[in-house]
Structure formats: C-alpha cells, structure tokens
Image 1: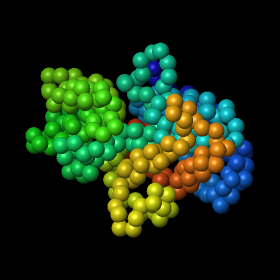
Image 2: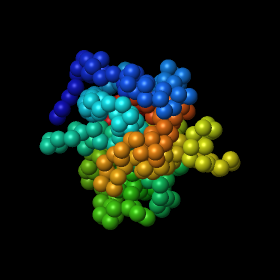
Image 3: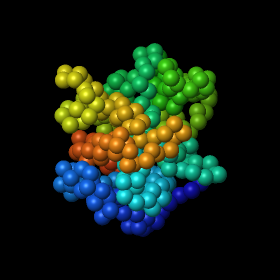
Image 4: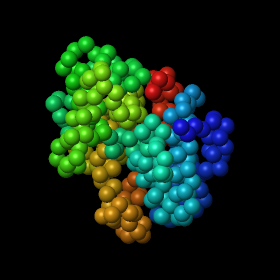
Length: 302
C-alpha cells in the first residue's frame, strides 16, 4: 500500500506551480484570448482537504506527479494538455503495481465526465439521488441500509452503470461486468470490488453533496453548448457533454492534435473559458474527489 504524508504532499505542492500561474501560459492567453486575461487573477485553485484520508493523500500525490510531467511541455501545447487533464483527466496512476484501492487517481471533473451514466437503465439515473441517503463506509453498506427493495435495486443499478455503462455505443464487455457488479452489491454474502467504493460511491456522493444535479444557469456556459432557453440541464450532465465536445482535441488513437490547428485552438479557448468561469469552479476546488467529502466529513470512512 502506498501512502503519502501530509508533509510530503505540501512539499510537492510547493514544487509544482499551477499552470495558470506560469508566465508562458499567460503570454499564450494574451496572444490568443486577451479578453480572458483579467479572469486569470480570479482562478479557483485545487487543494488538499483539511482532513485527508489515505486515499486522498495517495491521489493528491499521483495528481501532482501527473501535473509535474505535463508542466515540462511549453506554451500552447502545455495549456492544451493541462487544461484537459484538470477538467477531464481520469487516470494519474501509471505503473506495474496495483493501484491503491482500485483508484487510478482521477480528477474530480474526470470522474464526472467519464462516470456519468447518460443512459437511464431501469429508471436509475443521477436525477434520483436527492431521494437517497448515501451515508456509509462502502457502496454495499449504503445499499443494504435501504429497506425499499425497488430503491435498493435502482441504486445498485446506478452504481454499476457508473463503472460499466450499458446501452448505445458502450463496450460489448460491459454487459457482463455490469451484471456481476450489480449482483455483488445486492448480495450481502458477496464482497464487491473496491472500485464500487472508490469510484461508484464517491461519484454519487460528489454529485449529491456538491449539488451537481442542479440546473446550469450561467449564460456563458449555456451558450458554449448551445443550450436553448428554458431547457434544463444539470451541471453533471453539462460536464459530460462538454467532454464529448472536446473530442476535437484528439486524433483517433487518443493522442493530442497539434494545438496550432484552428479547430484545436478554438477548442482550447473554449475549454479555458469554462475553466475560468466561476460557475464551473466546483470541479477545481480539490485535487481528489475525496477532498470534497473529507472536508464535510461525508467520505471519511471511504
């Protein structure tokens, strides 16, 4: 098991400057999007919680390692990579050893963008979370605490969908994995994989505690996705759709496109505009998804 002392984490934070504070990045922004320069003085910076558990400490270290690696690039290319990583990065752990508690150290935004089950399966969706009490140390414990059988099954379905989504355009292997996960969560004699706790349960708690089910009201954010007046869209759904919109940043094999390409540069500018919008600041308050939960004593038992 890898652990990280608070002292080590603090030292790493001192060594790794936030990319939006770098002079070369400021110059890139000034040259390409001068209207955004004033907003650079009002940036929300990620932090570690005041009561980090071992999972958060480990994820903070991995996130800082990843950021330090991408900070080695320069200019527009660096801005492209670091913006995407901070907004949608889903994996900061790379290595031959097993990840700590099945976590790949995702960014908070990456957990939402990649884990949001856009398909409604058997009535299960993120919209139902206000009806649920998610207090508990494990996903299975939360599910077993629910007396109503229908609600219990819906929550197990939702958790499985965050890990292995089924439906249109999903991985053909997901169906079997989804069923196994769901059955394990509902069987008190079974022991579900740790990912049900560190991914599925944390994701649902993050959505509920940070009010990510609330409608996006900000005009600038709505305009970016061309959301018509009167149409309601949750911040969690918005973030997933924004991630899909950013596909122009990549080539087919997953590598980044050349940042000087006009379409790519336009996407970078759009993502930077979102990053600097206070209405999206909730995604950048902490390095780790656990940070939000630990600071409200919501996830201290995860």
